[in-house]
Length: 181
Picture 1 (cartoon, rainbow, N blue to C red):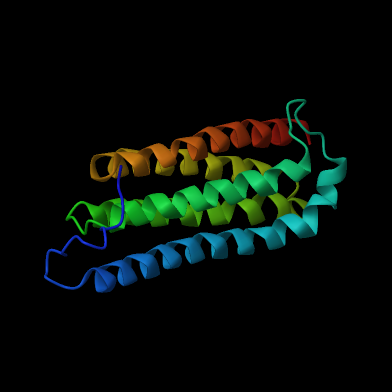
Picture 2: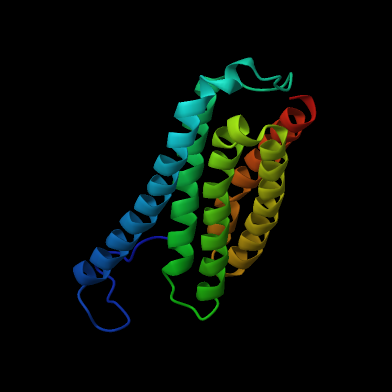
């Protein structure tokens, strides 16, 4: 299991363990903050519209209650941030392309929410189909991210599996909404 260096373990560059742990903790905080920022931006679209048009929308029979989305996304965004941090930590040459893919999926994640929730009142069903295209691209991007994360950190790749599962599930909800609204 991947861990921070022990207090007694010398760092590869001879720095004291406290100096090694400090940048690691700061980097983890940055990854967590980036995920929280994406979640916060997405929340604007959701909060403004989940009690608007979405209340009366024809939703899939397997749609979970609205209160479940917040806790699930909190867990997923945290797991995503920790996974990215685990890939960043070793500073391997293959970390950079993996983190670029991570950034791409984070942008797609951010685009889906306002497309689905905010554009529907303006564009109607076309917005739901556009959101469906985005979520399909998101599934591909997250899958590529898992494939790139896995060889660097198996734990990081595994941390993203609930995310893929959830967005595949969310894509079924999106498809139902596009077909039935």
